[in-house]
Image (cartoon, rainbow, N blue to C red; front, side, top):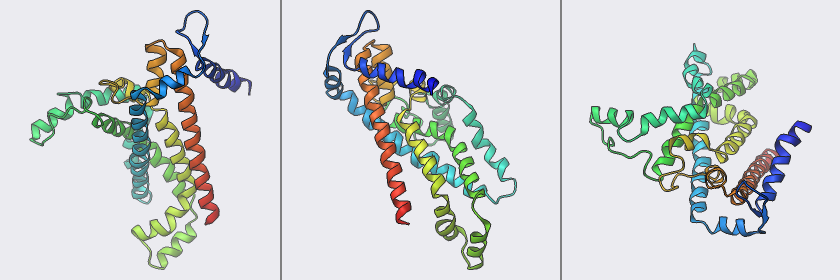
Length: 273
């Protein structure tokens, strides 16, 4: 508890205090009241950050979670299924910075993807993958999904292995297979684990930073910024610690609100069942 208090609670309380001050990292903070929050909500860049953060949340739920579930279901009873999942799991061992570097090489103008498309004569070789919004956000979501899909698949496989065999075998005796078996038996029994996977994905997407910073630094023209990038830029690039603290507090409130709302909805649905 002491470690958590020192490393988490005290810094957050200090950040909250700074959000009500004018402070550039030198000297003493000057009380500013709600000026930083007013400046934050009147900044058009915040709306862009909110839009991009919402895209990250939706994309992270749909792509890596959905793709991970697909991999898990297809390889669950497959011979050598663990070896088939291994290539999808390896990227999870790579840091977010390394993922950003790899995909920057692939997606930069004239990069590996553009050259490959040009070689085979497929349209899109002249696309500015990282320069046009919101295309840059979409391709970065796919880059992050490349890293996260494998571990989601592993979690879903663990969930499938925990399902009792009796109801599955009984459903198969009754003629259920394929999509019907998944929809009626496997998916309902995976709901508790799915709640955890989706909840973790929501929190991770709201805090997205490393991949975006390495690939675009929120540009061009702050068009691909997320709330975490905005917080970092205001604090450590522009030395406006008060405004950066306000963005940090706002991001914390958004994350807590989204997490609590999602968990409450899942719990209410489970009670209804």
